[in-house]
Length: 628
Image (cartoon, rainbow, N blue to C red):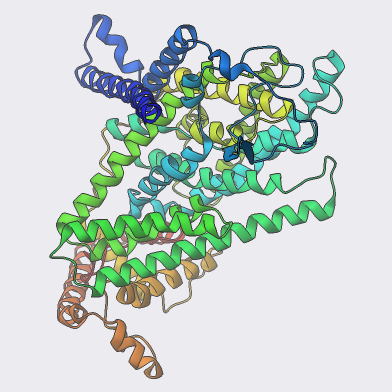
């Protein structure tokens, strides 16, 4: 009993160290925000250059250094090493018969290699070392869900094509370029005698390329949100980082299935098939849980119980991640798509109080999880026992990351700008290039496997990349915004009501007439998604929209009656009145512009170009009268 109490006291002290470190980073964040708002002189003038993630990293590193120097060594009883010559592999658990009592021991980690003469770590350092399983199962899901749930739906869907291009194609380009460059640097290491010929394989280089493709500009985005930077820059970088993390995680697991050290076509296509299958299956699970949550909040009448409403929403959203992981899919991809669709559908079924509670709940979890993770990363600098720092590999990593980011941002921006009126300016491209920080996702992927020398080199290099990019690039974000003359203080929600009504009418009217334009197929796809969402999905999953009995075929009448909310019938008259108002408003605007035919033609052309440029355009139109 005494040993149990002693163990509990030690665990409480260890958690106390982490909470004190986190509290210090929170207080530092308060000082930084206050100094940034006041722009004071003197010592406080340099506080805005610090940021929350950098402060958490700094405090975690200081804590790790103190523990490394002050922690006592292991007791003499734990230094005894017993040889088991009959075991050829490491068992996960061992049963020992000691004087008739059978005890079970579980494997924790390797504390000493065959040629390693150093002492094992102190137990406190071991317990405070980074655990990737805790990160992926506890900390990362609320971070990803919050990012997807808090997306500006209008801006995100307006830029969905560009975001998907950078997130998917850009990640693949980065992975290939980093992997190829690092393979060349590995060959150089072999020539210089810094590594043996069989230490690094092609799969190790591609593994490093995939985890380094996960951008994590947490500190930059926090500054962007506080300063209200240009909305195009914010949504491009925010959307890329959310989707990019999921793509990088699935890509890393797909490369891990590529078990050969040389290129084989069968293994290559197997990895591609695994990547596609995992993404499709994870999307399906996210969609299924969204449908279940939306229907429950729609018909269970939980609006009078905001606490139950919030609890159910939280549990079902987290169950998305657990279900995907239980099916050997990607819980991160599932929870990301679930967050986007929960915000688009389920959010409108919640009561006003539950809407506020869910937003604040996931915002708080996201803040605490991010700061805990960066504290852990700082701790790992001193608590990990087997760091291997290869100078050539580290230099090659920074060079390859820079080259990959250049080959990612600028060529893709050039392709996206072709035929577009609303182009991505060079200032935004330069800022996207600058904001390609590496963070917690890359570090956690590297920490999952440190059994071989190559993986330990990758882990130590990833740690340095994360520390330097977060400290250096994150701290110089504000000076870079000033240097590139990027707009700040922009309100992304500013949009004239008349213009929205006009655009909505253009979308509906033009959906029945062919457009003589090379991008007609894009516009057709936009209209198809808009019609599918407004006529079928929203009425089925929310209280909004026209009754399904008026949009579905007659043979679907029983299902339509079952899924149609009573509010839909009540809002039908309101819908007709709103459409009439928008039509009359459009007529008035047309009559006012009859005196300037040239200006009218130019405005119509601009609206048509904007209609075609929007990637899906779901955010261009004003929400109908039945939406909230």
